[in-house]
Length: 285
Image (cartoon, rainbow, N blue to C red):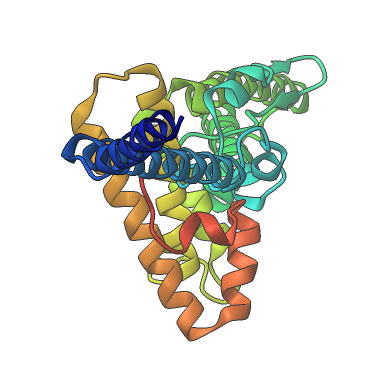
């Protein structure tokens, strides 16, 4: 009886000592270390995934660095001053063709004139010159061979009517020639630059090309044109670099304006359809 109890106790002690020895074995230590490493890697991966989700959410909320507004918020661009100043090819094609009625003498002038034709030139070409030409034509044709004989009144009326009709025909043809439809892409860009400079300059200096607001507006116009081009031609790598350079140039101009006068900075952002976060901080194009 005593011997069997002693044998049982010895087996119990041997089994407990073997368990303690197994826990101190090298393989057990390596398994515990690998388990800790796996848990650490899983935690790191979860943190990386969470950080990427947060960055993606912030990127979705942040305005586009090129367009200047959040995706889908096109109303901000269409309601700004720059969009109302710029003329597109669709705007030009949607206007009626210049025409005229010879019976009533009404000539419908083009809504958008070709570049180089301003208000003064328009008044000279369509108001002053036709009247002068008609007067000279009537005087030259009504002069009789005998200078002492006065011209007939009926012939004068007839000559004036013919001269008026001729000038109306020439005015109608010329109005179609100076229509902006006849300009190419460079001509339309020239006219848009002229309109932008006039719209963003001071009233007392309408051609102030060195004004920061004018420079920012011109840069935004070029950025919009390049963005539309790259949306159609996705393999144009060279113009991507130009777009990136223009975006950073615009941000530099606006930073200078903010440093000089923050009120002007806020006003020009609203006029250009831009948000602060689209031109401040790190810009990734």
